[in-house]
Image (tube, rainbow, N blue to C red; front, side, top):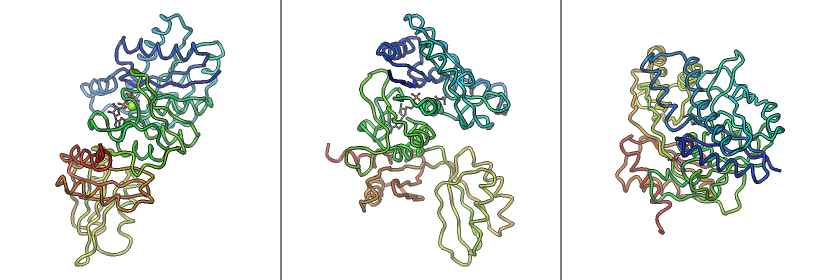
Length: 404
Ligand code: ADP
Ligand code: ASP
Ligand code: MG
């Protein structure tokens, strides 16, 4: 008997028909002699709709109350799925995050899972129940509901799989697996049979929303193999694991992130310690900086540019505005009309020329590069937001569609 964790995203439970389809998948797994723990997200666009509802009443609602509201979306799908499974004649129980033992940090809206105490889930499995758990939520040390950040249900599923040493963790979604680019935007995108944790982590962090990046981090840490697959076609999906059998692909994906902004500090005195001062100021306020570019000093000054998450831009500007005079810089320029386009692949480590190919694709499409950042397994460029979709297309065509 195996213990299987199955997670279903919002599109997989969006209406009654889809909920019945999920009930069918879950009960088939149970019928085959497995113990099944199911993690569900809120139906369809429920989370977005709840955010809109809150904004109508109070755009500055406290994060605590937002979590009270947002965690309700998952409660609806968990109970509806349990009812669907009852209808099919199987024993089932649905549990909220706190009932399932999810203890989180106190940060409302973006809490991290500290521990999963799966005692109650175990008891229910021993009673032969199928157990449905609400994804995306837990409880903090004040006994308040918290949520895990957008897309966080994937992480809930992996956390249960890790805490219970599950044999299999399946992430069901609305596409057939992880592709070389978003298959909804790039028709030529190809499904990958396998991908390593490290590559998937980069892709997820760089904008491929198919998996929550923290779920991949956790899967790697606890050696949980993930399968990403479609709840509609039920074909084999993509396996995410430590090592893959096939030869390393040069690159295995292109991702885009629009959710960023560029900030430039202009006329910074060209002397030691100023980058330290600027970035330590930002880090003290928990503002994460991504791509950094410093110009060569000229006439005793230089410019330092960097990117931040778009929702941190105002806080960063406020902080630096009051600081640039202190450090002797002359001004601040911001641009939220940018996108970061990245390629990821472990194979690029040993292949020179990958960056040149990427830049050639952009040049051929007449797209200007504002900033570049590289690591062993990724290359990112910052470009004009309007060019984002064309850039992904051009780069994808260069690496994946040449020999079609
Ligand atoms: P769920 O509701 O099941 O959690 P999400 O909407 O969070 O689903 O993630 C699935 C979506 O991720 C797909 O519909 C697809 O448009 C998008 N996506 C972006 N990049 C990729 C990629 N490289 N491979 C697969 N899907 C991707
Ligand atoms: N319902 C939450 C969201 O929309 C969590 C999730 O879907 O994973 O972000
Ligand atoms: Mg998701």
